[in-house]
Length: 99
Image (tube, rainbow, N blue to C red):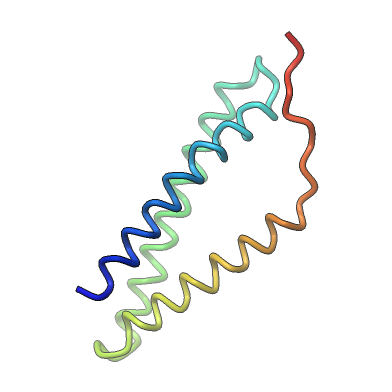
C-alpha cells in the first residue's frame, strides 16, 4: 500500500503533462500535417509503452523478486530525470499560429 500514493502522484503528473505536451506538439506542426502529427504522436506513445514493458519484463526476469520492483522504480526515475533534463535543454519555438 505504500506505493499507491506514489503511483497516484505519477498519474496526476502524467495527466497534467499530456494536455500541454499534445497542444504544443500539434501547434508546432503545420495545419495541413496535423493528421500526420497525430499519427506520429500515437506511434511514439505506443513505442514507449512497448519498450517500457520489454525493459521491465527483462528486469523482472533478471533480478531477484525481492529487489526487482525497487530497481524498476529506480530505472523509471532515472529515465524521467533524463527526459526532464533533455526537455529543459530544448529551446522552444513560438507556438502561436497566424489566424
